[in-house]
View 1 (cartoon, one colour):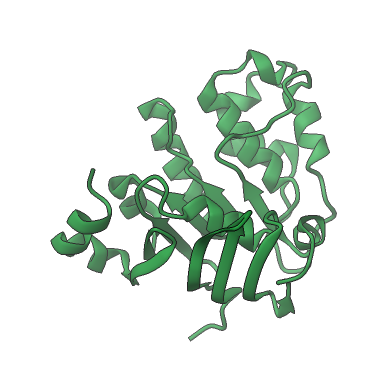
View 2 (cartoon, helix red, strand yellow; view 1 turned 45 degrees about the vertical axis):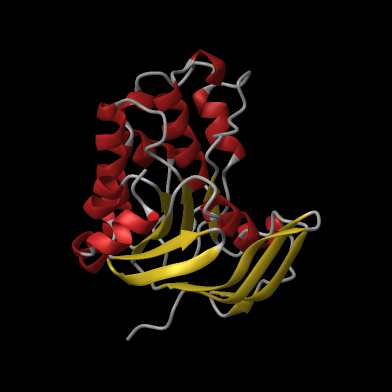
Length: 237
């Protein structure tokens, strides 16, 4: 077994006085795609924000690439090689595609494939056709692609990808699935927050299922797809 790239133990988190995560444990190994699944409000996005250091109140053990990151601010976690693609995209709408990409640039990392603008344009042909377009003039799906591409300009070892299929056209969803598989082939690990079971099945090796901030299932993607009880209790609307 390969040592985990990311290992989370007893993770608790709060919004103000309200506790929203309860003793979560998960791990992601090198070159692995892991799905974090559950209905709206289950705690998926909160888990990612807690791991990335974006929550003021969090407690637990978080180790990334051999580093204890539980008390680190988000910018230091990013410098270690963790990238975060938020659900709400947060591109710079007044900047062009190329300018957005340049903002995400970090130096190459040893043992990690370097992402250049040319390589990203091959991965995202839609962006290649609009390098001078401003972010505010792009569709939701194009903005989603730009957010992923900007994150990859940081040459991350691990990408936290929050709801990539949410609110985008089916053709963009297909491109997102192909992109995730290509990232995996390139050796990038991914923790994927997702509600769409079909999408998760296409790209993921393992899954964790959350409900009200607590872990309800962990196992292979095949085991989750085969468990009607788990799907009915925690995934189906």
